[in-house]
Length: 218
Image (cartoon, rainbow, N blue to C red; front, side, top):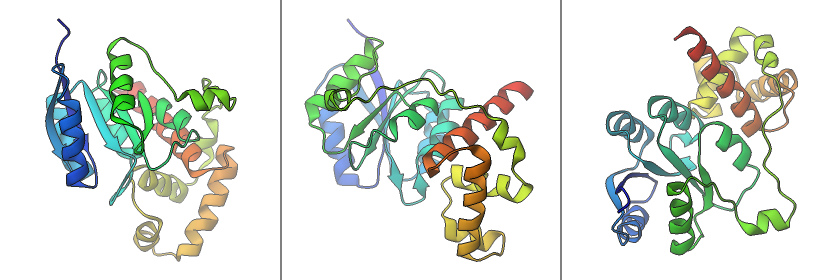
């Protein structure tokens, strides 16, 4: 008999989370041990309970999942994380996998697709939608170096730290007392230094650098 997996759900909508809980618990091998509607409670509970799986929305009122994902994965290394997105965005797959996710699934996926992904993880397999493969998508290990992070100024480092934590650009602008447009200018410079072209790629590289530094000085 397989081990019963303890699962935590983090999402924006209580009704949706309850529906997901009912779907998961139709399997006698899954027990939902908590449902949370904000990052702070979710992160704290993951740290305390060390669940087998966290099923979480990509976007929450406090921001995107990247910063919370890094924090949760660092504190619960054996936990699997499935990120639920509004669309099947394969551009998010690589950055999220490198930050510690075990899978990315559209919120429009069927219950059987969700259960199949979880079943694969239980057996030690990571799966992607067949449609991605048919479109030529091939996940690869990141070959980009992290030296660009060292070129960031103190202000740019602060901005990236806050972005990884899920803080909005408007709030960051208030914190460092600059205009919202200035944040865009800072980001353009940051992207050049990091040799990236998207926010997700910048977060991926900065979070990986931060994680390596913590491991080095732990």
